[in-house]
Length: 151
Image 1: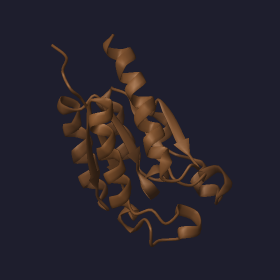
Image 2 (image 1 turned 135 degrees about the vertical axis):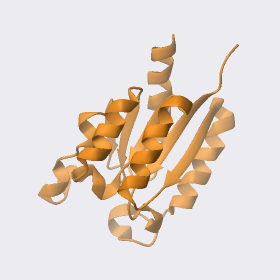
Image 3 (image 1 turned 90 degrees about the vertical axis):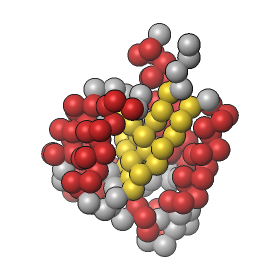
Image 4 (image 1 turned 90 degrees about the horizontal axis):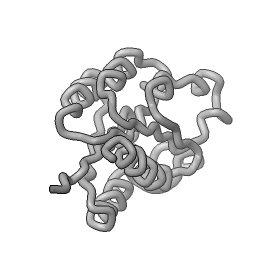
């Protein structure tokens, strides 16, 4: 019996403003458009993709803690929490399954404080600088990691 693999796509603070906030850095694509594109991949790739965005660190931590039972992997764009949240990093460490970090901008050619990510310390890999397409890249990568873990 082939159990449907489910991926949680988690977006942190201010990502609800994509398409409006600093379009020269983040582009003109809204989070809703990104989520719609990801939902098109569900049938094509025979996976479940569930998207969640919240500006509250505690809510994101709660979702990660509960994800262990229901998800095979997490794709996370923690926004500003990438650079500040040890608590979110610890929750992801508990998850113990494949994690891909996504940043729409290249955090390494921006302000120095953005060069360090706590999320990178627990993620299998990071994708940054490719804009909205970074999410699709992350889905393809995490499926390969999940399949490695299950086979």
